[in-house]
Image (cartoon, rainbow, N blue to C red):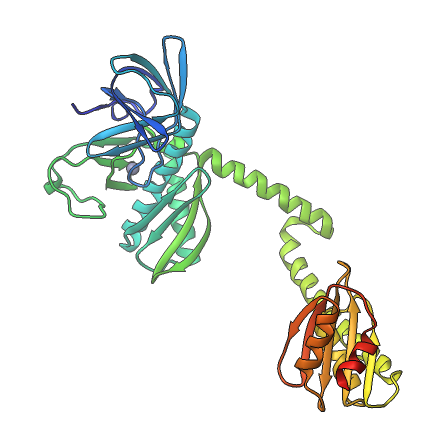
Length: 384
Ligand SMILES: [Zn+2]
């Protein structure tokens, strides 16, 4: 017996009664099959409904709903005996949000199709995000134009309907060729499309639509869009971030982008100045090392790159140079430059003595030491 799909009769109904016709264990949960349901199963890119079922003073949560081979399974952690009459209630806040996104998607996709002839070849909708993949390139101006028209259609509050017309006589969007009775959804003047989802009854209830981001994708365009309350919540969150940045930069919100660019340039200039100053400092430090066969220096808190630069400078006056730098975590970095010894052999000997590890190419060894020790003496010993 096929389950009667009550969600197609009224997409705003929230409660219903139905009889349990089957209940079986499935992957640690229970699949409950009813004679009729308001729970929309995942399909056509629209996520499923969630909610509860009540019976004989019991209640269980329905966390997933799926349709396979015409059977709609409602997944619960609790079994319900076959023959029980349940009262079901869907989480309408979730359903309404998904209908706002889905109906907005119809409006936007229909407009893109009408203006540019591009098909919506990929639709992703979940509780947080919605993205649409179109089969051709859209510029920012193209997208802005579609968003404007979509919002006009929302303001006009046109009807959204679903019926089963003679499809040989109408033009409609569809991902594939269809036969037999096809459910056609008409979203105001924007869209005529084959669809099995649930929709709002008027375009006005979408409230608003905006494209929040877009990118080139497989020769076409992926747009991230939002509608209704979800979009407004997104605006409020971004506004809070924007104001926070604006206060931190002491700039008006419409100036923060330029201000951030200025800060990035400033930061890059300071980095270059700092690198030059450090270079001079390393030259100065290297000058304090006495020229000889081996030059050694210990300086705390240097990065791997800085240790290399300092070691290289010492190596200009000493055929073998070694720098050790203690780090905040208690370990020490070691670097060894030499044109006369096997740096790998000498470096490993010091690492073995002080619980470290490292490696490198001929002439340069870098490693990390876990224990403190008399590195100059170990170096001397390893060179002999
Ligand atoms: Zn639809």
